[in-house]
Structure formats: structure tokens, C-alpha cells
Image 1: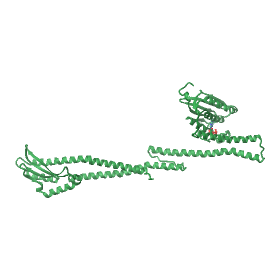
Image 2: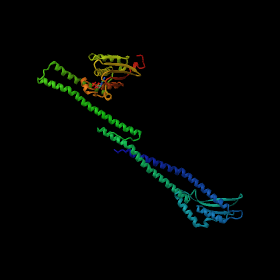
Image 3: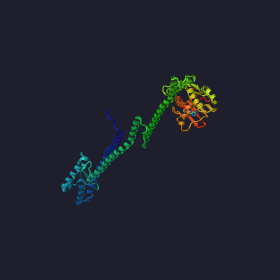
Image 4: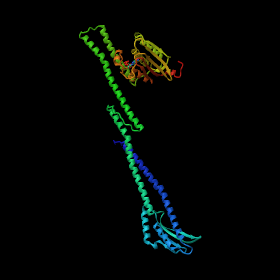
Length: 470
Ligand code: ADP
């Protein structure tokens, strides 16, 4: 396949093409429009000049005599200007004839003009023009002016035009050179960040996420591209770290109960331990723990997969909250917690099973991280087009540096403490995935030592939108 052209070549090419086009257009306009005007002006000038020669000769007649010296002067001067003059008196007699006077100069002038005008006006030629002379209303003769028509350039005119053309050509060449230079520089400025973005993306694809782009280009779109690549790299790095941590965490979480089980069972097999009901129960607990981790992982996987099917229906959140509190009855009583469900009944457009799971996870945390005789509450509210569910406790709270991370899977604010509480750090990740699948959002606020509040926002049930009574 043909190798595509580089952006730099294309931009430079485009710039040069634009300048070439502009120069071509200017010269075309100059040639066609200005050239035509100029030629018309020159030919008017030429006619006026012939008239003025005739008028000058005419003025050399005093009514009786012609001033032959002056006529000679006028004729010779006209010759030097490229006009060959013949003057006749009233009786058609030749008064003065440039060719008769100086044939050699006449031939030279005609030769020079023909040579000069060959390229300028090749269809032009020398022609005679008769201009009558009149004094007091009566004809006194005529002047024949022989000149190159419809216009010609004097030596001065030609050299002026030549200089002008040379200047124009130089400007054109300079503009071309400058545009090529500017094009190359400009193209490099634009293509460099794109090139480095492509390289950076290639490095990212190769698993190198730290090669972030540092350039600021001064071009908004290119800066946005650079920033997007940087964001992409850091988000992939974050995901990668999370994945590594997840694998390590899963391995770690599974290893502890499995090791315990293995040593216990070995001891029993070797006859070092009697398989008492207590020991068997303890082993069963370890198996249950492994089972819990696996089921947590399954839940997370199912919540994560795009195939998660939400069976949405108008769902009464207060009823679900009361049910959830009921399912923690034993633990609540054991810790002598004061639990309250407050606020109006709110209907959300949600999958009740999934919301029960969300409530269960939040409530389980609140109960888990609240000390003996603490307070836990679930508040329901409806604001704008959303249903709100806030699970509040006055427990241990979460440190500000942990707060943004608690929704990450396997993240535990205080792993040593959480080992005792039995958490695996998946609960909130599941909450977030489920709530987001509903088109809602979850956020946490907390003051260490004072308590935490988890707020879940869900879309309102269709029947309750616009109904503000409850
Ligand atoms: P776990 O199973 O460890 O509770 P979660 O994903 O539910 O995992 O919670 C993640 C971490 O957030 C917990 O380990 C804990 O440190 C912190 N956390 C969650 N809820 C609360 C809460 N109500 N009070 C204090 N800390 C909490």
C-alpha cells in the first residue's frame, strides 16, 4: 500500500500551494486588468503626444512664414521620443521631413522600438497618422506622425517596467521562500504533538504508562489531545494497579482461610486433633468465608458485566429499608444500636432485589463500623426528579485520604481493623456498580471519629414524578 503523506508535508505543501496560487492570481490580475488599463493609457498618451507635436508645429506659423528652425527642433525632439514627423504646408508641400533630415536616426529609432515591442505587442506596427493644422479657422497644412501603434514603450518606460517586473518577481520568490519556511515551522509545531501523542499511545499500548506528554503547544485542540492522552495513560495505570491489587487481594483473602483449613484437616488426618464438633464448625466457618468471598466476586462480576439485567419496577424504598433493618436484627440487638428509618415513602424506578443488595451492603457497613450502643439511621427523601436514600451512622468514620477510594474494589480503609470485621472491600464497589446501572449515583461523607453518611440517588418511580405530596 502507498505510504500516506506526513502531516508536515501536507501542511507545507498546502501553504506553498496557497502562496503560488496567490502569486499567480496577482500576476494574472496585474497582467489582464492593470496591463489592459496601462496599454489603453499608453495609447491615449501616444495620440495626445502626436496631437501636441502637431500643435507645436502649428504654432510655428505666424500667418506668413513658418519658423523652420523651431520646426526642426520639434521634429528632432519628437524623433528622440520615437515619433517620425513630416510636416506639410497648406499647399501640400513638405515643410520638414525627419527621414529626409536624418534617415539614419529614423531607421535606428524604428529598429529599436520594433525590437523592444516585439515581445510586448507583437501584433503592433508602425503607422502614419495625419493631423491637420488650422489657423483662425482655415487649414494651414498637416503633420504626419509615424509611430508604433497602438502603443509603444520608450526606453525609460521599458526600463521602468522591467524594474517593476523584477521587483514583483523578487517579491513572489521571497513570499514563496518565506511561506515554505513558515509552512515547515508551522507544520512542525502542529505535527510534533500529534506525533508524540501517537508515540505515547503506542507506549501505552506497550504497557508503559509513565511516558506522559509534557508539551504545551499553545493550540487549544492540541493541548486537549495531549491532556487526553495523559489522562488515558493515568487512568489505564490506575486500572492496571487496581487489577494487580485485586489479584493480590483475592489471592490473599483466599489463602488465609485455605491455610487454616489445610492445617486443621492435616492435624485431624494425622490424628493430632480429634475432629470435635467445635473444630469441624470452625472449619465450616472457614469454608463459608471462602464461599462469601467467591460469592462477593460473583456479584461484582455480574454487576460489572454489561449483561446485567435490571428488572425495574416502581420500588418503595422505605419498605425495602425497613426490611433491610429487619434482616440485621440480630447484629443490631447484639450491639445495642439505635436504628431509625425516617422520611416519606419514596418510589424509585429500580430493581428491588438490587436495591435490597445496596441497602444490605450499606447497612452492614454502618452496623459493622459503629461501636456498641451507636446510632444508625436510614433517611428517605425526594428532591427534584430523584429519590434519595441516606444511610448515616455515628461510627468510626473514614479518613479524608481514604474517602475517595472506598468505592474501589478490595479497598479497605484500615485493613488490620477490617480483617477483624471480616470485610473484603467489595461491598461498596458492588453498591456503586448497581446504583450506576440504575442511572443513579452514590457518594460518601464522613468525619473520622464522628460518623459517616452514604447518599444514594436513584431515578424516581414513573408514577411519582411531578407528585410532591409525600
Ligand atoms: P468491607 O467489606 O471491607 O466493608 P466495603 O467496600 O463495604 O468493604 O467498604 C470499604 C471500606 O470503606 C471499608 O473497609 C471501611 O474501611 C470503609 N467503610 C465503609 N463503610 C463505612 C462506614 N459506615 N464507616 C466507616 N468506614 C466505612
